[in-house]
Image (cartoon, rainbow, N blue to C red; front, side, top):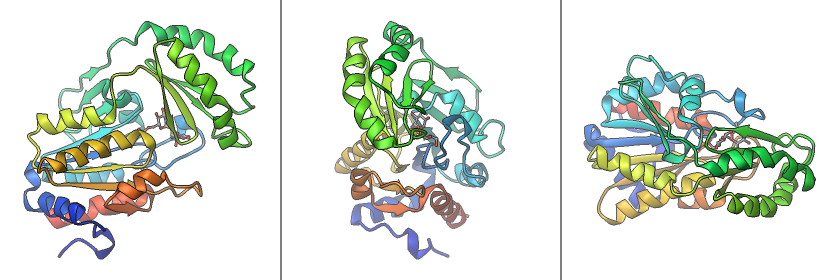
Length: 283
Ligand SMILES: O=P(O)(O)OC[C@H]1O[C@H](O[C@H]2O[C@H](CO)[C@@H](O)[C@H](O)[C@H]2O)[C@H](O)[C@@H](O)[C@@H]1O
């Protein structure tokens, strides 16, 4: 049958990665970001949900490959709930690596590992509203409390980019004072503990499954660490395919991610089509 033309990677490394996945799917890892990749971007982060076909397509693909993981900045429990991943036939072995790898949920046990946040998060939580008021955070600025991280969103302000630019420097200083780092994303500045990123999370998952090929898909700056991990492992001989989920909201793509990707798909709908094509090809 063959993979449709529109999913042919633009690079030789990407074509090698795809070929390796198709040749030995049982030894391949498929790892996917959540927001912007599996779930369309929406104004209210609590209203984000996986693309309507995502769970069904994943449940068709997962039994045909070595392992599937969702690697996300979300708390693992939120990604499981918003993704509708729990109890889906075919997703019995799905893993969700949440909060950039600090948290983990495994479908086959139902176990959630979510370590206690460092003390700096509680202090930042208490002081953040005053800091935002002092720095003139515009109306619509909203803080998502993720337990071990605080994400300051500007998407719902009148001018999201200027609002984010205005808050970037003061939030960086504020984070540092509390032993945290700023993780920038799509109209969000997240204050989170250092020491974990999606690259380390992905590398650990690849080692755990003795992966012989990897596909990683993401859409945002936080996915660059995972891209770097795949690039590093490709240099060591592990074939890999890097997929960028391009924005469908009218905002500019994350240039560096698009430039480093082997394949750019049009948002979650495009990614779901790619995953469906893989599942069909693997029969
Ligand atoms: O690693 P991800 O799964 O991509 O999560 C990154 C952040 O995604 C969420 O924010 C983004 O999606 C929202 C819902 O579509 C959108 O409103 C916001 O502008 C985006 O930045 C999430 O709210 C964060 O906690 C995640 O860290």
